Length: 171
Length: 105
Image 1 (cartoon, rainbow over the protein chains, first blue to last red):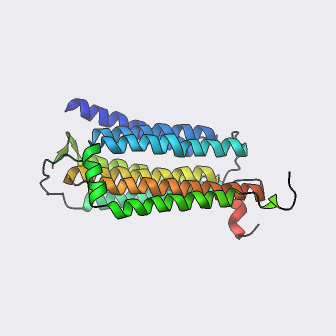
Image 2 (cartoon, chains in turn red, green):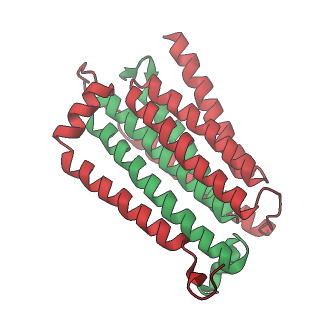
Image 3 (cartoon, rainbow over the protein chains, first blue to last red):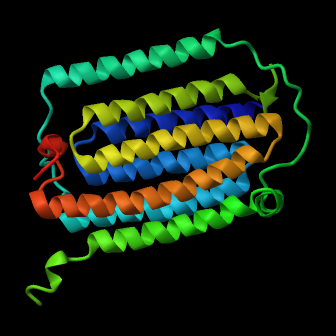
């Protein structure tokens, strides 16, 4: 019990700290690397919550695919230097105050909500076996539709990334 | 209060609220469109974490399936979004969002 508690605190600390560093680091490449640390911490939380399948998928999809895509774009656009122009101090102050107000609202709503009293049944969810059973029985149609969504996204990305000047001046 | 492996559900609520707020702060704070994208991913992950926590709390796999679909949608969103970003960079030679406040080049 105490071990999982310590692990929870450690992972939460790592997640929040690296999330803050994502926001405040000047170099976009550093932001990406800190975001990868955040994602690994969240994957650790998934393992702690008995969601092994989601932890694996999270590491593969986010740390493996999405972050590589981000790094690739940053390298391609040659943004790996601290060239960002900064917002004015007033804007930064306004942004911080707005985010703080949002946090106050969230904290207030969480504190004001009544305690959850549902008695959970001891059913295993989250292993690959159980997730597969649910995914392919109850959620088969959304699963298939999401494949169409990914296909559409791929076609859209290729269409957007295509050089429109191709026909006019062939390289 | 029922606990998840010794951890109260409240703690996950706090953690998710903190991560979500950091994401919102990043969106408001930064001007680089790529970093704003990353902060949106951070917000999605805060919500995902909360969904998994509640799914575990109620022993219902639907929440985890939902997270699975959110991941698929996030992957699609990132692919299209970064393609749009590339297009924007090709036209304006910058990823600063202040360039785009006129909704034209």
